[in-house]
Length: 210
Image (cartoon, rainbow, N blue to C red; front, side, top):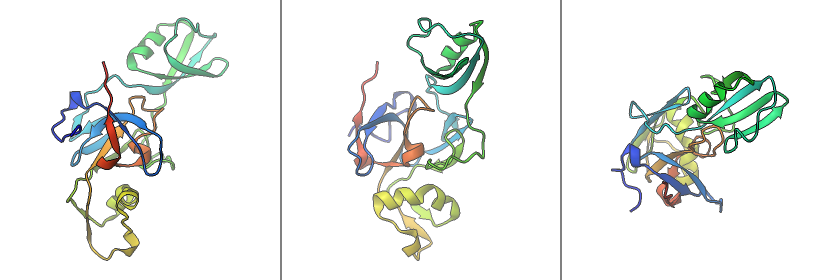
C-alpha cells in the first residue's frame, strides 16, 4: 500500500484525503502514523518527543510599514494589505528574514497563538499549542477518561459510530488505523487540527513533490 508505518520522517509526503461525506479532496502533509505521539508547542511540531524535521513551513505574521510595499519585490510571497501600512504575510522564516531588511518595515509580529487560547472551531482547540496526543491505532484499548473524551470522542463518533453516553465500559477498542495530517502553510490550512484524525479509508493517495 502507499502509506506504511515504516515511512520515515524526511520522506513522509503530502497526502490527499477526503472527510466524511465531503466530495472535496484536501491535501496536507502526513505527519502522524498509527501509534505516533504528537505535540505542538508554539507552532513547532514534535513527533514521539523529537522536533519534526520538516522546516519549509509558513506561519502568519503581521507586518507594519511606514510606506506601501513594492509589489514587484514581493512577487511570489503570500500576503494581503489589511489596511494602509499593515500587512498579513503567510511566510517562511527565510522570507521573513528578507522582509526585515526592508527599511519600509517598522515591525514584524508573529501570529502564533498563545497557550491556553481557545479556538472553538478546532478539533484541538489551539492551532499552535496542543497535545500530546497519540494517533489512534487499530486494536488500541482507549481508556474512558476526560483526556480521551476531549481528543478522540468526535473522531470515533464520526468514523466508528461510537457513542460515549451509550457505553458502559471503562475502555474502547479502536476499530481502525488513523493518521494525522498538517498543512505546510500552518495558519492557512484545513487539516487534522480542524477535522480530527483521518482513517485509512479516507486517504486517497500521495502527492509527487520535487
